[in-house]
Length: 220
Image 1 (cartoon, one colour):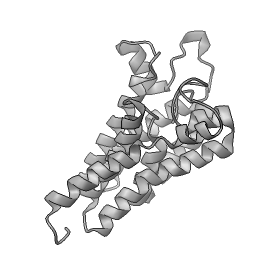
Image 2 (image 1 turned 135 degrees about the vertical axis):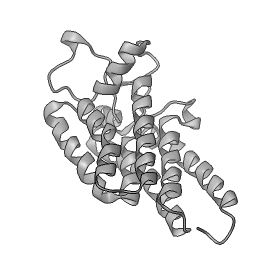
Image 3 (image 1 turned 180 degrees about the vertical axis):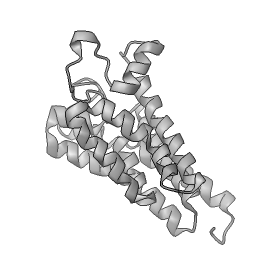
């Protein structure tokens, strides 16, 4: 715990992480390319959509920048003496900022890259689990792989004997990621059934529209 009162510094870190997370790097890079990601591709303001409409170098740059948004707040918090629970919550606020950006009228990307940055700083061993499911996504579809990889992460953390504070943090992170998937894009169909479909498959496609092993049209 820092020598100075945590009641002052921790809230400031939370607010700072949210504002950092709110910077829509994919949209900024898209604008450099003359694109408004809200009007092209899937309409999602994230690295996946930028890759789709501008090419992988642009998408990779956005993903790296988004990952750093989750990495640095956790590292800074840990350097100040905060434990994994408190530092992880700071990183979680960066994910919340990315998903519901104050600069994008409350809605932005899906938070996967930022979550990877958080996990890299907090517990990099667990990235083996999420990375494995990312690779499996080439076969079973990125949406389903993301649902299983991140949705089951708190259980994996508990099974590996991680502290309860870390497993609870990862549970909240999983809920944040699933909530954003369920929300979809502004034009997405409303209702519980479409929302659950988006949570599992990360897509608004249904029936014959949904190809076997489909790409993740709404992620990250």
